[in-house]
Amino acid sequence: MKKKTPKTTKLSLISNLPVIKIVSEEEEMHVKLGLEMEDKTHDMLVKWGKEVASDEDYINIAISAGLKHLISSNK
Figure 1 (spheres, helix red, strand yellow):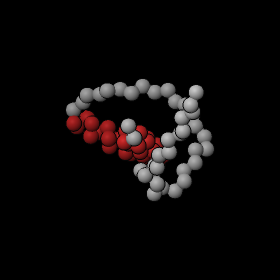
Figure 2 (spheres, rainbow, N blue to C red):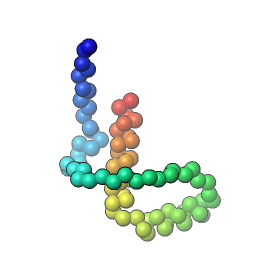
Figure 3 (cartoon, one colour):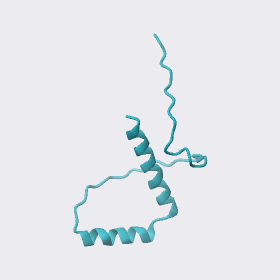
C-alpha cells in the first residue's frame, strides 16, 4: 500500500506571531446555547461580560477564532 506524504501547510494567519507553546490542557464540558433576546438585553450581557472577562478569556477567543479561520480557508 502506498503511503501518503503529509501535506505541509504554511500558517500565514499566524506567521507573524511569536512561538506559543501549549504547556497544559484541561478538558471542560460545556453546552452551547442558541439564544434569542432583545437588543438591550444583549447589550447588557456584553457589558457584564467585558467587566468580568480576563486576559486569558480574550486569548482563548482569539486562538479559537484563528484556528477556525485557518481550517475554513484550507478546505
